[in-house]
Each structure stands twice: as C-alpha cells, then as structure tokens.
Image (cartoon, rainbow, N blue to C red; front, side):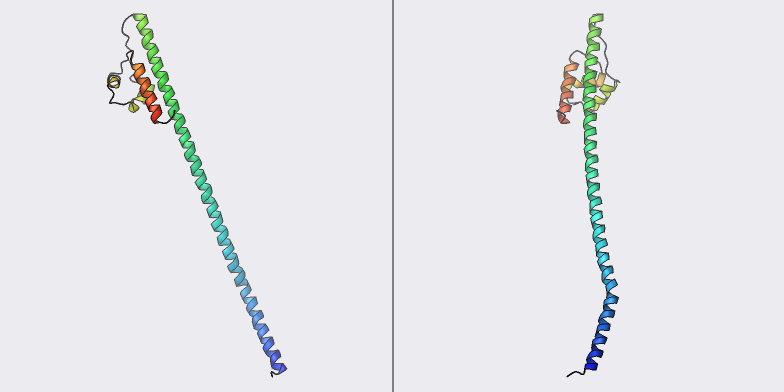
Length: 156
C-alpha cells in the first residue's frame, strides 16, 4: 500500500503540475483559436470583396454594352436622317431648277461616320464612296446598307 503522506505529496505535485500546465497552455490555446478565427474572418472578408468586385465588373460591362448599343442606335438614326435630308435636298433642287442637282454627301458628318461601315464590294456604293455625288437611287442603296449594318449590330 501507498503511504498516505506520499499519496498526498504525489497528488499535490501532480495537481500543481497540471495546474501550472493549464495556466501556461491556456493562453497558447486561446491565441491559436483566435488566430484561426481571424484567418477565417480574413478569408471570408476577402471572398466577399472578390464577389463584390466581380459583380461590379459585370455591372460595368453591362453598362458599357448598353452604352455601345445606344451609341450605335444613335448612329443608325443619324445616318437615316442624313439620307432623308440628302434625298429631300436632291428632290428640292431638281424641282426648283429643272436640272440634275449637284448634291454631295462627302464631308458631311453623317456620311463620314457611315463610310467605314459600307460594303465596298457593292458596285452601287463605289460611285458614292469615290465621288460623294448624290443621285436619285442612292437613298434606297444607303437605306439598304444601313439596314444591313443594323442587322449585323443586332439592333433589330
């Protein structure tokens, strides 16, 4: 049997060691737990920021697409109005003078913005592109080209 004094000494020493170990290890355990919590919190904040950034980029891309579509629609409208005005000027000059009018579209803003989009392989357009002089059939040709461009831009 174990002597009760030795049992008391061993119990006191063991209790002291366990108490000291607990008091020494407790801050370490708390520190590691806090470190893990902060790391998880940091990762969550980073994931949230990345998600917000992704949504912001998508929103800005959509705004850019909408702005581009609006700009293209404005160009289409400007070109149609330009063709209409050139036709009206041609018809008004033709009726007033009784001769073939000299209506040129070269240098007009609406035509110069349309020019790069025209199909140069079409023979009807080559005369307009080279000379810029307007004749009665040009309105239909340009309206067809504007409609083609509008379809290519998927605005209809």
